[in-house]
Image 1 (cartoon, rainbow, N blue to C red):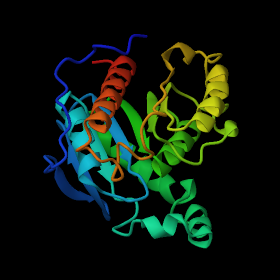
Image 2: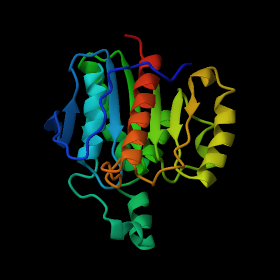
Image 3: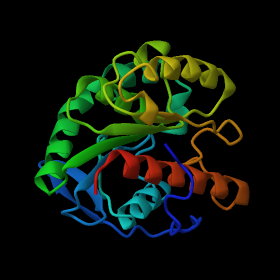
Image 4: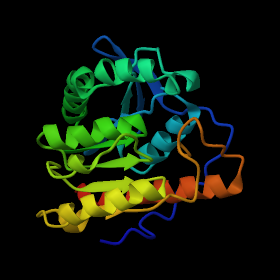
Length: 243
């Protein structure tokens, strides 16, 4: 599978950005919608622990401009974690056991994926950032009918997360320690029928969270790596989703 040059019209990201999509409701949950409703290709996005941010909207808007219909539900209902929370073991234990768990997110995944399908998507994939990468990876294990998923600087992934994955995976780890574990996991994925469609790409040269709120996109090096990530995402989803 080729991952280079699939899209020549991806714009460079900018540090100051106004979202182009729309905010609305899906049932009782706030959501961000971008791209063309009715597209045959839908992407469900799980943001990171800091919730909505212009950087995440910009990535989603670019994917939307490339022909995907993108949905970003507010899984935290307006109450993200803070930087201080991340350093508090008690808060993080409570978070992962409750509102940050797959159990808390599963119904919203099903609702959002059903919405994308009912809106015309015949192929649906999922995308997760940081903590959302862990949840999205669980979704690839638990849910049927997804064409694949991508996880960007994922957090809390373990070696046990790969064996039950049911569809192609694109992963972008952010440190050397994780990279070694991902290499072992992808060796297992390569044995599956969809193994040739899986891709592991290292982003150990940039800061954790570079595609999300922690990313300083005024830094040309960071901005370039964000565009590299978007190119990978767009090409991966294009390859696993029929037009």
